[in-house]
Length: 526
Image 1 (spheres, rainbow, N blue to C red):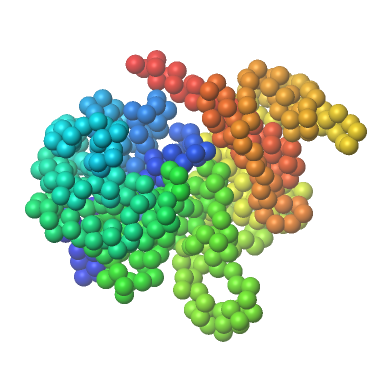
Image 2: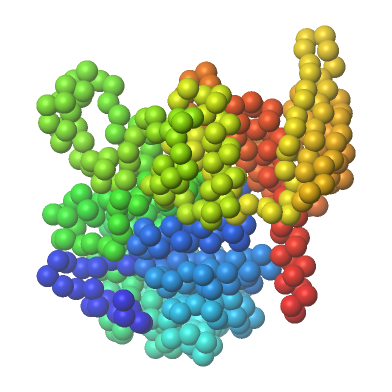
């Protein structure tokens, strides 16, 4: 791909090439409870490259030492996509983004500044002329570090159109190679947003010197529709996330954007992307497992029911001609069903090969640990499904080599018995043991763990879900703890829900310990 991008670069006999800007690791990770550590972010970034996204927005470096480290790690380890970092229109933000991006072969600094009246009046307390000067100055400063600079007038869909056009013209003149038009609060309606993009393309004199991008939020459920309307009206880049995760109600979903363009080439004038659709399901499942955000069964493209038919009429039609009720083939998006894939007699090679098909890329040591877990599970379950494999492998991705590990758990309780739990934990090569009473087996288990690790926590959220169907299904636990004034997500899975709870609790604790270590290392470098 050429750098910097220009609107006409992707025009050919096939149609217009739409740039896919993935912000799963920045905006998506800002969704409450979706916190990822640096190791997990790198794993997602690797899969995004396999998916074929053009730009990966890796994070907001100035926001925290952890975010800086994550962006820096992605910049070091990820090839095949432009690595982007977000910055406010402040020199310190831009410098942080530039420093985090230093190792990247291809990099982009994404600068933003609010331009709507409500934001200028109440948040920034600045007049239009001041905003113009700040925006221009920020883009010029970013260009000192990077040739590829994107500018976003935050809350663009609620900005006065005349002023919006002035801002866009000014930042392009200052050196912005992409101008992004965000529907920051998901306020715009589809025809209205399309008209806005068309107006910008027609009214801004130097618009052909930059790519017009859009970033739509889903507060009113029209993020994908607005994004598609935008490219019909001149936009050349769509900012989106895997599974549509993100702030509040989320963002436009990359899988829905891509499959709309592929399925309705006739309507979208043969616009296309560089996405490999067969990687969609793998990517979706990886992001879901690492963030702990379950995918709704009726979610389009990647939901469990997306290719299932219960109606007799539908079943009859599909059996006669699949296209009668399926406009997308499951194979098109890499969806291979949830049938039995492994058993207790399966070997390492078959196990490793299946994990690759599911989108996991583990080290030899991680595969070995996951294989041991798989064998234990296979002895307990008659059927081992893909989701079971995803659940047990999740513990190996970006694992915590110096963290706490559950080695043994005993509990007792009943209607007239005070619940009691006894746990054994391992940290490195040391074994620790404690027992405690509580309001229930899970509470007593957590209290026993607290005795060992000596870290106080407050349980904020707790949810249980069946990973697969059947009485021997794995149970998945997702929880949120408050530890040292931080809200930390934890996940665990087991055929025993109390064991799954203990693993989720330790997962959260280990995240805190890892985050503390990253901050300490970062401060040591400074």
